[in-house]
Each structure stands twice: as C-alpha cells, then as structure tokens.
Image 1 (spheres, rainbow, N blue to C red):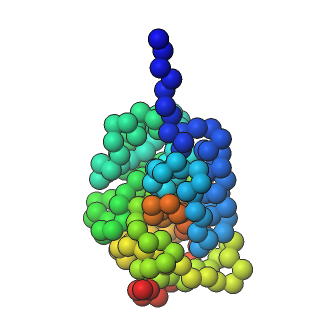
Image 2: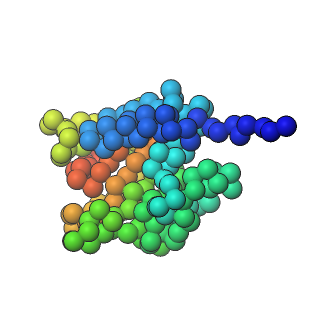
Length: 193
C-alpha cells in the first residue's frame, strides 16, 4: 500500500504561482500590502514567500535558524552564508546583527543584491510608520511596519546608499506581505498605534 505525500499548499505549483504574482505586485507597487491567506493553507506568509522564491538554483541564509528541517526539505534550495545568499530570512523584531553583511551586487550586476525576507507582526496596521516614494508609487504613501525594529530601516539605508547596489526587503506578518525595493525612498515617521 502506498501513501500519497501530503504537500503543504505553499509548495503546490498553482499556489506558488499565485503567491509569486502577489509578491510581484507588491514589488511593483511598494507600500501596498497583499493578504496571502487564500493561498498559504495556514502557513506563515514569510514561509509562503520563500516557497514562491526558492528552488534548487538559489541560495538561502537563515542566520537565526528560523526554518525547520522539514522547511528546508520542501524549499530544496542551497543553504548559504549570508554574504553569498541570494535570499536571507530573518526575524525583524530585534535589531539586525552587527555582522549581517548581505550581498549588495556590483555596478555591472546589481541584480545580485540579496532579497531579505523579514518576519514581523502587525504589518500595515501598527508599529514603525514610514512614508514611501519612488517608482511604482503615484506620489507617496504611508505604511505601518508592525513590530519591525527601526534598526532594519537604518541598515537598509546603509546597504542601499550607492544605488543601484543594495538589497530589497520583503516584510511579512502572519498572512500579509509588503515590499521595500531598493528603488523606494523611505522616510521614518515614528510609531503608529
């Protein structure tokens, strides 16, 4: 007797395509918040984003060891040190580690800059409030980044100061996602309750 493997929703191709489309929309319209719950099967949005982005051809760093062995089995990507990783997964409720040095790309290959997937709570509704402007934003918009530690925005400014070099941030709470591409200008406004 054979047993069918129960594949979580976020690893099914149809769901991954929809998750990827939502993520692309967020990257194209920085500050917009997409609810991924319809396609995650109850999985956290950050894991769903990783499932949509990762495959055997990319590398992922998990410096805080947030992923389980089962997560790695399904993601099928290469584990990598932060400096060489295409994607980095972190918890954003604490300040970034002093030695966190992601790939920023080069002038001839800026696309080699890392994408950092950051887990928070309360995205879009509470916490650190920012004003965003730049490509994909009509004039400007505001976004609440939930429990994101302000140190991440400070560090992002350092990493992205020599555009087109830099990193892209994807901020996720339990079910929602928003993107801060390196092309987006971010002004911190204080706490939003």
